[in-house]
Length: 163
Image (cartoon, rainbow, N blue to C red):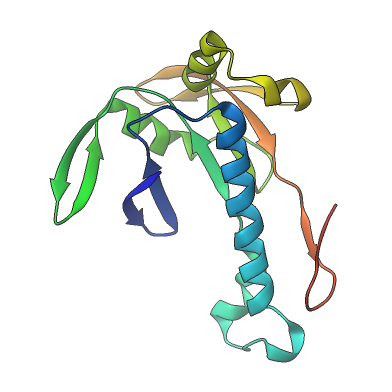
């Protein structure tokens, strides 16, 4: 995947090629999730923790992944591929959803339909995805499924424990 833009605390990744299997997509999200929390763990070790307000809030950080498939436009701006179109707007609006957990992978139904047609959905059989629908301004009712990421506890200075 490539980075299109950094916006506040969000990173927009994209791929113009859809060669990955659904297993690859989920594994990539899981790897980013684990690496993020490993790095966060390095910053929050009690005897090394900075006492400023920003550092004290690190434990509140989390990751959300929005996985969508659709037609987009692109143009190059100062070496970055700027994406545009209604599909990009939809994903931005989906960030204001009703999912009751802090960290998750959200799969739009459009994305899941593409992988179901290609039979690239083997890992979905092993995962309990939660079905959800929200009314999105300008788009109406949008169906999606999500997978809650595991909670992480910092158990000691070197290990991360998943519960």
